[in-house]
Amino acid sequence: MIPKRHVKLFKNGRNQAVRIPREFELPGEDAIMRKEGDRLIIEPAPPKSLLALLATLAPLDEDFPPIPDPLPDPVEL
Image: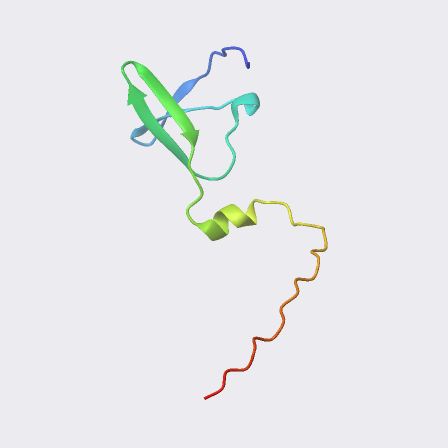
């Protein structure tokens, strides 16, 4: 578990901001923020689409076996 760390709060225009230390860095460019009582919770945002999720996966480097696909029996009319 990563230990607690004091961080600096500052103003960015009319917003309050916090500097996130490297060891607490979140992946991606978006996050979800919510309040639970006096706690402020910031967590990574889920991918926006299946394509976005697939783009984060490592490519498969394996050959799949051939699948037998025989022609269907002819149908007499």
